[in-house]
Image 1 (tube, one colour):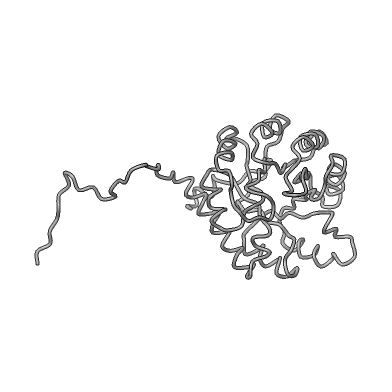
Image 2 (cartoon, one colour):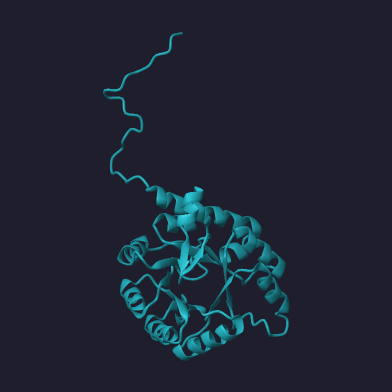
Length: 269
């Protein structure tokens, strides 16, 4: 991507402009050192973390917290594991006080089988937190109506799933995500969960979605550093392809080198 595109084409999260279109999680790595190196290799500028799992004030969490702080990245606390509006709102409030940010990735589990977000509770919690000055990044399904409610409340970012958390299946319903993209062209959309391969990230960006958030795909790779680098390149490739304007699909074959009415040039022996 040219320098001109780099200047103009930045990821926008509630007015904060970022170069990288990859957001990355901080759990499940073999060690804090590997986590730090893998995140650096990915080029991500936003790292997610959970108060419920990684309280920097808890015993044994100091090494993790120091590794996160040394990266100098934007922190995106989440409400992972919450099942009720009250729990999610309280965790968001504690996260803001502890991590000194009004960004919150709002997660509300509606079903423990596939960890699908609870759409009704999500809308209720979003309304409360937006009213308290939070910049809410709601983790939602690819339901267009729920997306509309969240946008109407004031969300400038949506985080629809590609597939259930930790499955690594990529985008299961491209039509639904494309419909959300087309319906809300000015809303930042970050595919969250289900991204297992760099090709999944490329696909997301090629569709015109703005970014991807992932964790397991890098943390559980045999070589997390190399996988982080692979995802960095994948999101750049996908965004560049989207900006370039992909060719239209055709139902019939079409020669890439037409011969009708074209001169043939023969080289003498």
